[in-house]
Image (tube, rainbow, N blue to C red; front, side):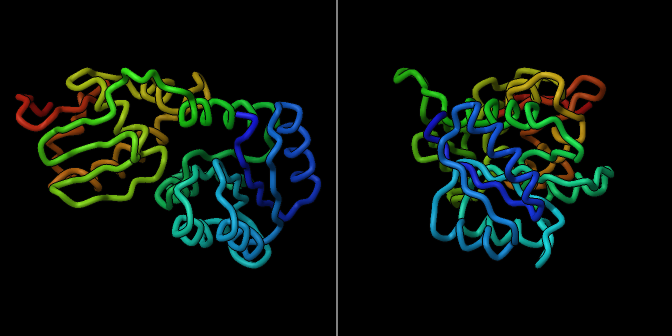
Length: 238
């Protein structure tokens, strides 16, 4: 984790300094900062980051506008940082590819905890015996390459959507509540909201289902949660 590269993007120098100081105390050594969207894009094109903390309100363009441009250069997880806390703002952020949404004012130690939990999920060492390939007919996953193919076509998934698919794939036909999914995929109990899981489920369906409005793989069990049904399995819609 000490070698993880993090980019902090915010136009308030006090916030950048505070976050950088807290993360350094948490043993993060490779931290870059940017105060504009243009600086952030330049850094993302020049370097590879493990996680990006992106302010929504930047002087030259919004984080919502620059997020898709950053996504063109990296699949690194993106955490939005903003004072805008409405459900619509959060849904917009997740729809654009964000992996988490942190509202101001915030506890910097909580931010550090979210970052550490996320990186543990994505950079933790795995036993050599762990399964690295999943074949569910039209859906195939190669974890060593981080690739997902659907009907023979490689698809691009935001980091957190990929982790959600991978977790469900490791537990086919098993029911998980929203809180269980958040704890297993996002890595911290109590930080999640129902909307986080719901939006990522919807994005996953849009990528892997033939008809996202009538899914055959990511099944909703009303009032209980979700389960992944591989091709050929028998299931009933609620």
